[in-house]
Length: 279
Image: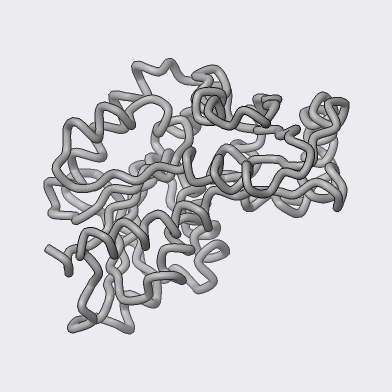
């Protein structure tokens, strides 16, 4: 079981930021990544729909024999985390608690902001997670257009900067000193977010913190890969349009995504050069 792959799931390409950090911190581990690009973005969808789509993909990963599930999507984490931990025997890691712990440690004034999709902010999952931090005052803001821009490969346009200024203005008025990026797409927007918020505001990204949780959990449960076989990386998307996924996957993972296979299930398997070299 220790040499089985880690299953990572997201609503689209954003969770690849988590996969990238898992690969960096755990280079011997194999990964199966599924991005539900057919139904992205999850943010505007009802919780019941998010739960349905998420559990279908998580079931698929468990059926394939993964040793751990990583829900690399804030909207899905808010919708299905409790169900997933009751439903599966493998450990389930999510992206909300790791970012909250980092933000509590980072803030100097106790005034923390969180941005996310409509589903994530509406669920109040971050408010619940911060509840135990008595010295923290939390301010939240939904940023529904950010995911759309990331999925289209736009992280620098004047239109995006204008949108960011509009979204972030209320948080600036609250004089926050720490901003939690409550969506795994948002690490790709750190340039524009840092520019708008200013250098005095620390950005807390869930990708690095989630990968640390993956490391700790594998270590404490004696599930670390023993290094006897090379790692394998499989990146899949449920949607039929692979061009944007391939472009962004190459950008996020730092290498050309060179192969696309259509599976009988209709899931598209995008395999990067790392897998080809290690096969």
